[in-house]
Length: 481
Image (cartoon, rainbow, N blue to C red; front, side, top):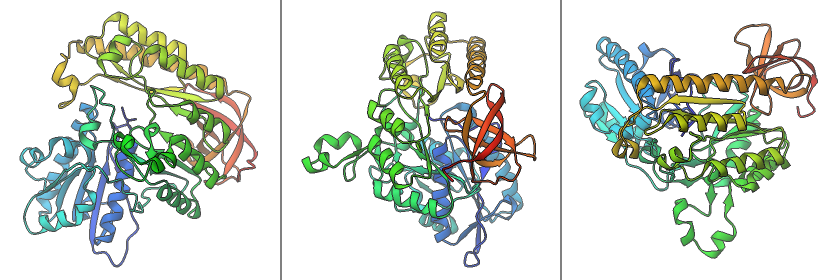
């Protein structure tokens, strides 16, 4: 399950400085996971070469694109509401074209054109290079659809346009697709099979980011621990590779090490991991390099073995505990976050109690918690009855959230009195006199601005906390500047 960006907020519009050589204007919004936001930067780059500048004013746009998410029903509802707004604007500006990108586009395909009468363009996650051709079709008065899934496309040859960037942190995609087939998830059907990107193209992109002043990179994939480069091709075909390819293959631990060594003053994070695929060599590599952040997003979804089997998760409760124990032993200061689903089909009160007891064992630093919503096209939708009443789902979800808040405060209190390195990212939302940044454990840290600047590493003494935020005072510049 992918980590979800809060869709209660309006989708993020991506803005590119005007280029005099480009005459058409693009407005693009992104919803859902970090991969969607990264993909929108790829789309902006492709369309920049095709004559488009991006704009933050939708009324000025010649082309409006919404990059969509299908992982939860609420995400799709949010997108549909936005499309209603686009349609209203299009009635005033009939020359404007509207397109849908991403997972909803892949899932609904041509039905989107039938359901949403004013949509002109539907493009799946693997077809973005075809956008200039599809837009040409639309310009000639025809609707255009390309939702074909690819076995090779990684967009490794596209230099993303960094849009709405703070100039400090950036995403770099390393894999696409997912082979895990969790019964609740549409990703394997909307993004295809797992394939990995050439590590040299990844390192080149990171080098470019460093030269532009970026200080932190998050390596992205639906399942980063499945990263495996052996010269190209699907992960499932690795066994057919030659002996030379197998001997020189780069796994995720190897990629992490390459990144850490290539840019020793840059911080690295990654998301998302899958418990069944995370190996000891990844944890050991994280512990070996100080510039690999000590934070793992490790979705578990449920604490019940029965529900894990129903979800087709390829790990048990005990195996998950063993992984947690290894992380704690090798990296005692590592923070861990979770994804949790409340009210999955057949979930009983005992299953729910298993989830709560698992949370008590791990005591996550923070988490992303949802009530189950049936997604069309998933194995759960086809084979399982959504039999947990909504009021019970909400009550169980609330209990999970309350427990997570308790554990969050427990974890942030462990930072009190410590001096921790913080990368300044932006002004604090609550005070223009304070900076906001994150420590290695991915916890937000707020402290007075003084003479420090965005993009600097600062050692901060933690003096107070909430369940989600650390509060402190800068004591000096970090040696890593």
